[in-house]
Picture 1 (cartoon, rainbow, N blue to C red):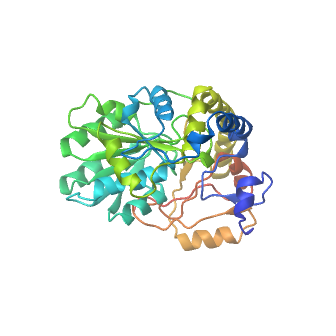
Picture 2: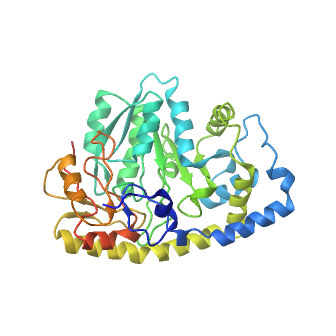
Picture 3: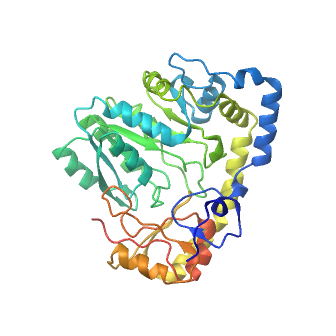
Length: 380
């Protein structure tokens, strides 16, 4: 198996290694020239502002950017807090929700985004998983857990989930919001892939549903990494009044604020229409790769239980076999397939082993070479 080169993985479209461990946008999905042009115009027009410290005193982010994000999501800009990418949003939210929480239990989809789990555990959380089905969390299992112990929060990626590709149904979203109110817990809704829908109709955001359910609490986490550029490091939180200020107080004691220049560039990308144009372009770019990947998996694996998403970065396959991570990785290492297969870790709430996730752009050739894109044992 070819040794991975981090530079090649990001910059070279001809790299012999197909990475199954990260959802990295292809270079064609990043409008680099347009972003560079916007950056130049910002630097020419207002260099003093973008090279100075941002205001402090519970500063929640560049006002222009928050106005643009508010318009994009149809929410009050004062409910938005801007961060250095969505991972920093998760870190600040974990600190905010767990610091004085009477209970440190956190529930998440199983499997889920492993970096989120690492962040929660760093803040003292005990993370456990709820099995993921084709339409979202297994609510029967969730209800059973809630009757035993109510978590500080439940973490979800409800649209084109990482790494399962699953989208939570409208019915389950409404029930999750109702359960939040009934059992008094917060839902963290992470939506980095939501805009990358190829087909169908998007279910309602949990944050929107919570507005009409008394006692429900939902915090929505967004990012520009998949729809504009991961290099801008722009993430954000949409929360109820008071939450942005509380997060700002935590942020100022850590890093003061996100970079003013990058926030202004992101704001101008929204204002100029670049973000919406790029979303359309990325959908067109990824759709045929998605279709090729699904076709390749079906050809290679036949009647395996395949989650076919209507967008996003990931597909998943549930094979009717049980194996161990060690055996799977050993078999993969002995095959000249041009892929890098990461360890899953086997932790409940993290990715079950063996688990592979990949951007559809590199998937077809790998499957045709005889390596399935995802092979997971049943829920632990």
